[in-house]
Amino acid sequence: MEFYLLLDNYIKEIGCTAKQLAEKSKLSASVISRYRSGDRVPSPDSDILKKLATGISQLSDQSYDIILGQMNSCLTSRTSFAKHAFYKIDRLVSELYIKQADIARAFNYDASFISRVLSGQRLPSNIDGFLRDIARYVASNCSSKERIEILAGTIYVTSSELQSESERFQAILNWLIYDDTPTINFLNTLDNFDYNDFLTSLHFTDVKMPSEHLQIPPSHIYIGKNQMKQGELDFMKIAALSRSSDSVLFYSDMSMNDMLDADFPRMYMTGLAILVKKGLHLNVIHNLNRPLNELLIGLETWIPLYMTGQLSPYYFDGYADEFFNHLLYSAGSISLYGSCVGGNREYGHYYLTKKKEEVAYLKKRAEKMLEMSSPLLQIYRSSDKDSFYKMLSTTISSSESYRSILSSPPIAIISNDLLKKIVHGYAKDKGLNKEKTEELQALIKKCMQIEKKLLLKPPKDKPIHVSIHKLSEEEFNKSPVYLPLGLGFVDINIPYTYETYCQHIHEYDQYQKTHKNIIIEETDNLNFKNMQIRMGSIQGEHWVLISKSLSPNIHFMTKHPTLVEALSKIESASACFDT
Image 1 (spheres, rainbow, N blue to C red):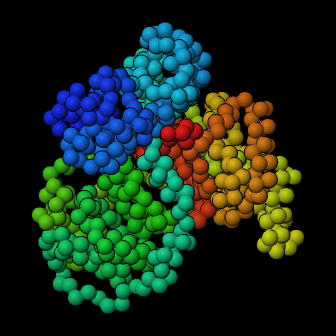
Image 2 (cartoon, rainbow, N blue to C red):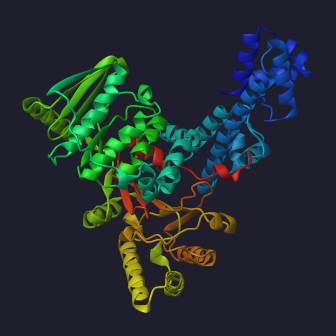
Image 3 (cartoon, helix red, strand yellow):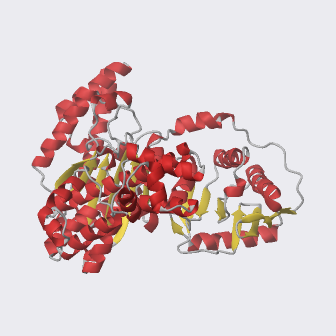
């Protein structure tokens, strides 16, 4: 919410005048007027803001601390968002060689004001209006083919999406106002996830297969929330006890809000773990008809099972039913299906059946649903190496645009001397003999060859944009970085020292000087340690590949529009400002 709206709400709720608030706050009426109109805003935690909170508290008998907290939260979040957007504007101006003075003249701004805004020293009173002015100016001054291509590379869309001035305006504005926080949180979870730690926390090795059959008749009805919870757990236990090795389908667009108590999520995940331990393959059709933040939080809960390689995620494109919610689980010898009204399980039921005819019918129904769905993620592990390389080669060579977000420089450009230094240091720490050391070095060189072949050739002679966070020594010591061997499916932690890390960064900088198609952009808050992200587009269809190097070594490819849009818009600058 804008600060002026928050202030106006307080005044209306209290039923006071601006003059009365000015008197209680010991501020002038003109200051209150400017804040209320949106012409100016106070700074977070400033004396003026504290006076204003005092005046509102005295007039309303509301808590001073709560009022000040709400005001600070409003200003801080808005300031952080604005400065992030202004960094993007500064980048646009730089990439397109736009003069700040020209922008100032076009909208009757003072030239020094533009400079202070873009440097983070000043905030416009009307942030949204300012961003629209910038988007409008850039859109009208980027009509040539060359400038459209530069703009497309800067805001991560294709040139075909920027042909008209209105398309350019909307694309630029969307890029400026986009909040990438939920996406970065999701990626950080993925980056930090350690599958071995997960198995330990779940006590996976101690998870025991059920040994006693449930005393359930051939069919059973579960009515209401608590019984429906039990129905889902019963389905998984019977599927685990069954002799069938058929894959299991899970589909549900049910709300999870009324299912989240102290025990059910843990028992549900344990049930899934039992099915995985049995060796069953799980096909899950996700409900993605929800806000991005909820979508990403939901996907986070499935990350551990994605890592097993025994789960294939799907989704229905554009499906939504605002009145009824549905569930269908299908295994080899049992099925569970049901519905509820408006997401409320108190008005719902499940039907569990072991009857052969019903199970066969519901299995066909599940197969048809799977046929109608689209893959959410294509998941590649070491066993899928050949198909992964084929996919990646075709994707990169066909892409019109290409961008990478790296946790460390590409292994393909490392010098022989530096590689030898890193490997020998690792071998010494691990006590490897000469033969094992040479085998390891040969394995890494094979990774280098794979990366050179697949990634270093620019798509259709277009530039490659590379974002990388260059760690300080303090950051490195807190969280060391490892050689990026993910493309070779080498799941070995071979750490840099800070010296070898800096040397690899330097070699990449030198490589870029002789390869003008590579554009390196240093980032501040995309600080991944164990992950590489690559993205591009083929004939207007966007794709994103997330490669996790360690624990486990796995790759996720997605073309889902919402996920791709969120991942392709992540930016790097918000941490470079003080808020």
